[in-house]
Structure formats: C-alpha cells, structure tokens
Length: 297
Ligand SMILES: [Fe+2]
Image (cartoon, rainbow, N blue to C red; front, side):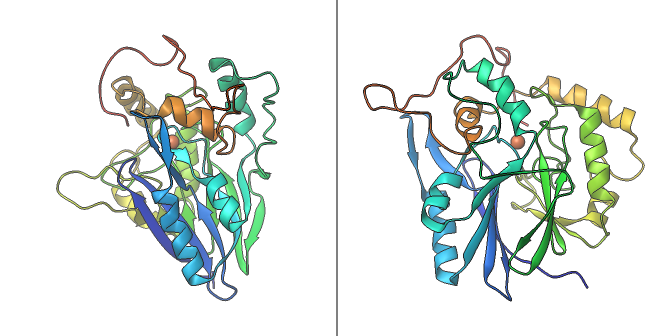
C-alpha cells in the first residue's frame, strides 16, 4: 500500500498561493512546498507573516525539515525558501530546467556578471523521475513543463503536488504564455499527471474560486479526469492548445512578476546589496508584456 503523507496547507490570500508542509508521521520528517515571502510593492518592503505561520507549525509539531521544494520559479509571489531554511534547515530544490529560466531572465534583468545561470544558487536540482525521501516517505520529482520550462510536480506517498499545471476542476489549467512556456507541452504534462492512480490526492499551488464556492486546493486524479473544465478526459491536444492560446491572449502579467522572478531565480535570495548597503530590484521599461489590462491567469 502507498504510504499516506500528512499534508498541512497554508493559504496566502494576497497571492492566492498554497504552501504545503508534507509530513512523514512515522519519523516526523517533513518537506515544505512553495513557501511565500510577503512583499509590499507600495513600499518595497518584505515581511514574513506567511512563512511564520509555516515556521510555527513546524516548530510546534517538532518536525525535521529535509526539503524546501519549489514547483517552479513563481511569477506571482516571492519565495520564502531562504527565510525558512535559515530557521529550519532543509535543502532548497527545484527542477534542473531552472537553468533555462535563469538564462532568459538574466538577460531580461541585465543581472550582475557574477550571476551564473547554472542552478548553483539552489541546494539541489531534480532530474525528471528522480527519487528522494522525506523520512520514510518515498517521493519522486516529475518534470511537467509547459507553464514554464522548469515546472516539476512532486509525488509523495499517495499525494501529488502539481504546481502550476492544473487548478481545481472548475477553474482549469495554468497559462502557458510565459517565456519558454508551451501549451502543447503543458497538455502532455497534464496527461502525465492524469495517468497517475485514480485515487491519488492532487494538491494545487493556487486557487481562484468562482464567487459560488470557498477557496479549495485538494482534488483527485479521478475528479480532474472527469470534471476539469479545460482538460477532462476526451479533450484532445489541439482543442486544448487552441483554448489555451485564446485565453492567454487576454491575460495581463501577474502584478508581482517583476520582483518575483528576480528573487525566485536566485533561490529566494534578494539581489546583492549595492555600495550603499541597500538591495534593489530592477524594472525593465517596455520589455515585458504589453500595455493592456486584464486578469492575471
Ligand atoms: Fe506559476
């Protein structure tokens, strides 16, 4: 029988991100997935309320953190990985294709010469299919590109953490129009996830619920196969790609994409301080997106 992971979820209403703590009850070892560092764009200040909720839980439960896992370089929130590592330990890991994302955005942000786009800012880079352990729980990293080239899903015991591939069945799927994104790849990645055992618990990275229901983040492979509005069983690749292209055309960039990418491609480190001791984020003018407005999905 597949081991049951204990999953505790922490929802950040500001960015609609769900951070997970995944626990092996037998050994009290744990992994943290997609932690958030709060960022206030009006003041350029960071704060740690979101990560502190995770930190308190881990301390209260007496957990040993083995891993801090990123599903991808997020464009909608800054990562709390460095803050949590500093307090709890654990190895910060992401998919090895982060190098591709770093290469693209090193140019976009004209980053310092000494920033090398080789993934070395992270403690570990996962290959597709690589196995790892959380205490006694067996886990596997699954490459699921399409939203970005570096997206990984993490299958842990009887659960899978899907990152930005699928959303809840009534919301659908993630956009595929970021640099290096590809709707064809996203479709194939989703089919790979939907080929997991039907009763696999699926945990989303975000929720954007319709007005008729509360925020939710847990589904199953069977429920997604039957009910996902974009990609239920029977929807073919061509149909999906046409839908995704049409939909992505109307989406504005996420409001925190510019600060998020600069921090998250550094594994959650802020940029180095300048000669006045202050860290700065850059805004490339007339480089990203278009001057339209719309929703950010
Ligand atoms: Fe994302």
